[in-house]
Image (cartoon, rainbow, N blue to C red; front, side, top):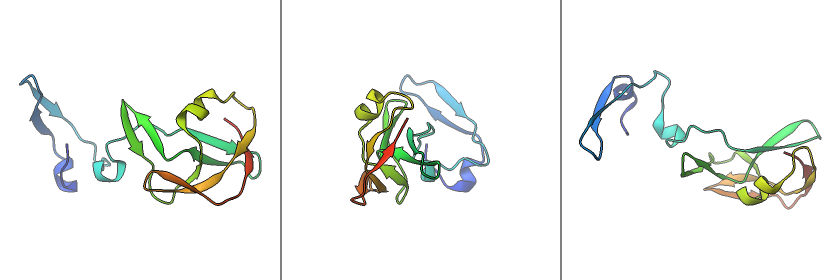
Length: 115
């Protein structure tokens, strides 16, 4: 459901595919435009240097949807499959970068990161 910020403060009704009316209640802090309809946290990897974390890739799955991480967010160039295969607390070589339109653009550097 998309709407202006003022319309999101109100309760709205819509019709489901089966014809049933669905009532949705929106919180005052809800902003579907900024969140892109994705409310799941993205997977992050950490580094022991400065205890800093970056998102694993710039696209994550949320409720069966591909969600793009916001532009200029710190990332590691790693796929979701590679992230899933990582063992917890085991370090590996990672390539830091910045998210740009769903792609982690690397800096050319390499550092150790862990899940």
